[in-house]
Length: 532
Image 1 (cartoon, one colour):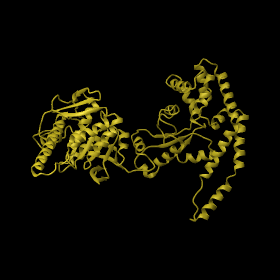
Image 2 (image 1 turned 90 degrees about the horizontal axis):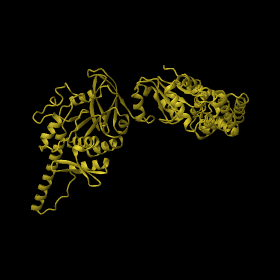
Image 3 (image 1 turned 30 degrees about the vertical axis):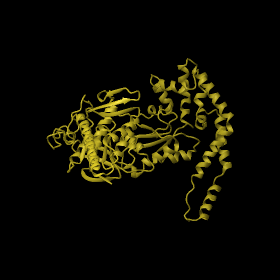
Image 4 (image 1 turned 180 degrees about the horizontal axis):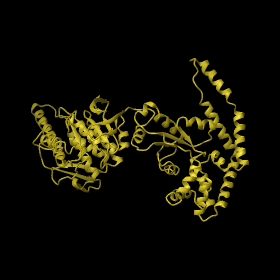
């Protein structure tokens, strides 16, 4: 169990973790200042803070020093004085001073190499004199660095030799460390700092993601943690994906900072319902949240920011996830972490009006179309596209309308059966546990539910609804019930467009003077979602 002290709402408190800690907050939330505060609480020289303001210039030749001198320069900012005030200009530059200690980091590594080699040679000589078998070569610091390096840069080798650091590519081409990429140099710097620090050190890393590509960042810190099992890591980051990747770490969210060593902090305890990444994404927003169906970057989700400009749009894959996450974030237990208005938006997808109203009570709203893709087919949008294609808008819309009604009638039975199945499934989900805890009671409850579901009546009611829409040529009604994701692609040729070009064209037109007209058309089929 690891412990650290942090100021929670003005009071210093000890918090624990099975492994490490992650401090998360938006830019300007006082993360770096909190890291400096944690460092100042040390009483036994056990906290090393690696600043985000770090120089990465590597000298041609490394200055050979004792490991103690090199460590003092890294830890205190000077070899002569054991007072950390010097390193941070006596508190005047605790978070802004550029730390230029790369030479000392490499000096410490070479000093450790020499020390480990000397110890092994002495041991071998002693064993030779006594006639004992020589010990196996222990794992030394260069072995650890190499293993970490190979895990993130498998195409090149790291070489520590003759007070120089070099890299060698697979084709045998070598280059000096000063010519390495930023990612390579920062990797050596961080590995060196962490491995050289004494056992049981608390290591505070401000912005562990700087200069590191996501593809190597997680591996790097996983490996460093593996080779530093007695050390406690406190990561200070605004990278939400990285924060979520520290699965076993205790997460600390900074809600606010007054600039005078007073923070409003929340400990984020693991929640089985909500992934850490999503919690961080919500907390990192400045706007109310609207959960929607779909994936990031999908055509449909690119529409929502225009319709709901006051909301931050977060896709949640499917309808069930939107419902689950909206309810979870509005749970009183989770509400203590945020002050946001959290809403959900789902497709109509054969829902009854009773279902629509029921979801609304949970702040989950429903589109007036079966699938979000049907938004592209609203009458006004079809006409806007037709004009853009130099077509007669009224004639083009009639052709689109006739095509969709013909297509629907061609799969009449399929759509009717799907509508009925959805309603039956919803009713079956209303099963509740009986008061009596027995098999007979469970079976009886199920029988009651089954007997309450009149499949024939559901079928006739849905058929009547469909037939009315067809008879009256109710186009809006058709978009509400016609559940087929490819519809906008199928009507594209009518509008002289390829299948994929249709949604792309609308998205392009949203960046022109057609924006307001398109948004008005979309709002005819989307619910008003008012910020509470």
